[in-house]
Image 1 (cartoon, rainbow, N blue to C red):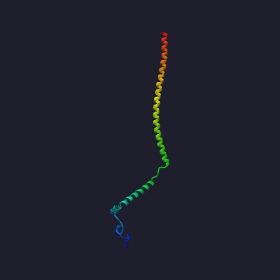
Image 2: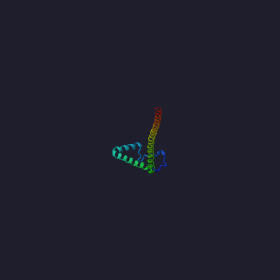
Image 3: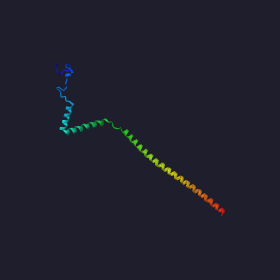
Image 4: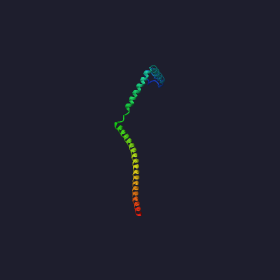
Length: 132
């Protein structure tokens, strides 16, 4: 029987660790720890390089916002700000118009009172002249 012929032997006899460079997870972790302890600068540079590569990959996969969308966003923001500014200006102008209308009403009332006072003054003089 050929030792590389696994078809003739039962599955329970197969051991991949025998005659191979197989390492258990515990052995792999301890060997990585050992390498990092022996070469800390190389480990830091390696981690930095891996992080840089992953950052470039992630950035290249994300699609940038098209210029049209950026322009539309800016225009919407300008429109919102102008609307707020217009609303504030409208409130101020509306208040000033109400104040102006009140002043005109008072002025018209005072003119009416003045005209009535003059008319009454003339009538009063005429009555006094009748009796004098």
